[in-house]
Length: 108
Image (cartoon, rainbow, N blue to C red; front, side):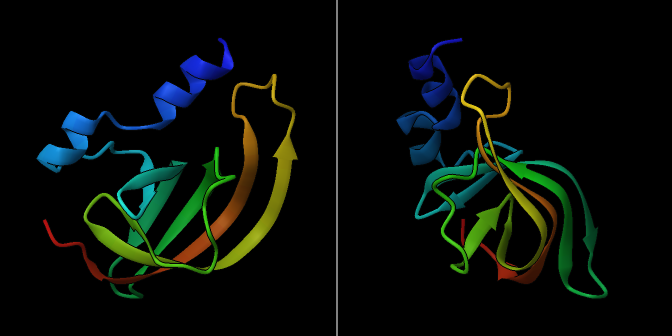
């Protein structure tokens, strides 16, 4: 897969964004996809998300607020961060063992 195809996959179409549709595995900052999420647990009692892995996260600004599905979150802890070769399936920075506070719900 070439770089342009990967970039197109990482961005939601303008029609999707205008309609308020969001990709289920994407983290957003400023209505822009900045990373992808793999495997997570929502703990409503502790008001946090425990994320196994965040990938393609080169554009994710930490510690700035971001949005995942209908949650507004703030990343608090990262167990491990690595940078992967651009020829790998999951490109860019990979964050593992991430814990994020749930700040509230995003406005629709």
